[in-house]
Length: 353
View 1 (cartoon, rainbow, N blue to C red):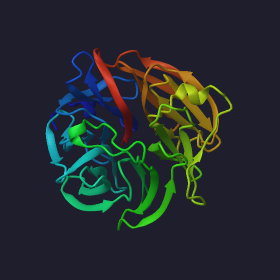
View 2 (view 1 turned 180 degrees about the horizontal axis):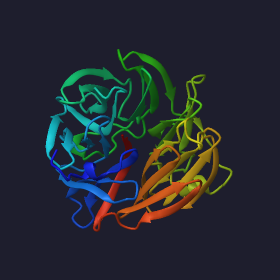
View 3 (view 1 turned 90 degrees about the vertical axis):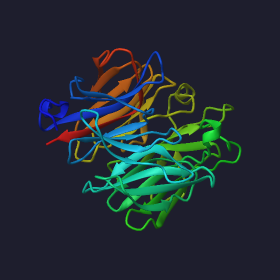
View 4 (view 1 turned 30 degrees about the vertical axis):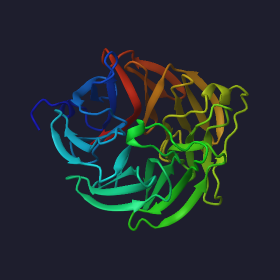
């Protein structure tokens, strides 16, 4: 990597943050921003497709960029924006925008859909070269975010079927069935399955709580109601449990929508606490006691991505805003990391050691 590139300017043992963005005016130009913990841009480069998630490689100075656009490849770039590796979607497939690295950083797992079959798959690839190594069914439709824990992969099957010819429009709202599944990361064997508690409630995003349960953020695909859209998965059940908030207006204000779901790790002094962003409801909600108890919301226009490292959290919002959460207090860190951009939905972080 060239001397002076962004990552070499970052302080060791501090996190780097990464997110995708699009040009606020044209809406057709896309890019990646890597920031330090203070919100200073460390790397900024264009990419060919709209970004859903971007991540930092665990043990090398590279970025991974995932898109949901039909035909878009899974791509790896260095911090100067040079393309390093690319995985094109297999025939009749498109990627669903989320990927995770194995614990040793050697394997990458990503969600994809076969739009002709209407079925979901996990693609396993060599993380360095992005060479495809295996394909496993997710036993559902429209897989979205996935989570790796030990030798298990948890996948939120949205239940929503799309097709490139319909520009990602949902095609099966009246019949969709959403599930969360747990499969083996070694064999793809199905180990457990949870069903959504409501026919059109679509599981999307998830994180593991300090006690081992999973909190799942959902999106309600109908406009007839505003049901709870935060659910809990426990090993003793086969159904996701909807979590109610004492605030009677909370579900209405959420508008049947969640974006990022992030839990503080067991090693954090905030273990058991969760932050959930809601760009439609313009809020960041806070949950505690292993994520099951709603404790309040903070107003935040177009709250998007959440990244957590240790005891701290960062949140992207709207047109380039970056916020920081610390000990229950949320404050704006930068009103605009970069002028003229609009953040995409997710934010990731990694410690530079």
